[in-house]
Image (tube, rainbow, N blue to C red; front, side, top):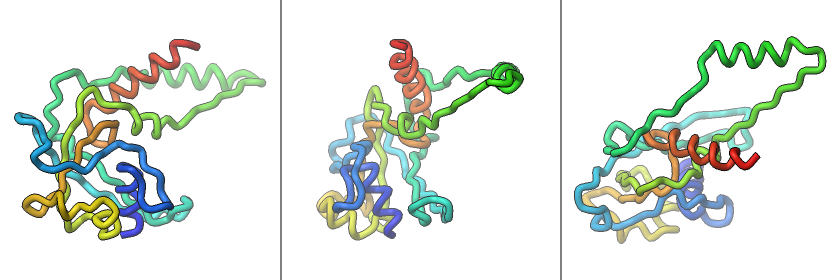
Length: 173
């Protein structure tokens, strides 16, 4: 429950004083979903990660198979041969140096071109979050609805949008 509350807080506007939010989701009334938009489901993944600071972790992903995104969603990637050439070109030099960066949070904080919508069973939301966000007022047929405004795992368009934003920002350099 603590890990679940932390995940909801991270995605929304925080949970008490221990977790800062990213404004990725906003809890909304079911009537705020625009006409004709598909509402998807949330999928919860729970793991024990002893090497992390927070060992018990929860991740909420979007049911991407129900998202009706009208645009392109595929991202160009490098082939295995290109990657092998790059790595061999670096490690074959005596003074070769290589660095990588994890852009996970960049992916997760990429603004969407249009919001997506998801509903979550109220029984899966920790009481701490229900209380912090006054969610009992928003319950409709045992569900709470959220508007998604930034990239989340499971959104078919998230990778492409993050890739385009990263390319625009790196183009300056």
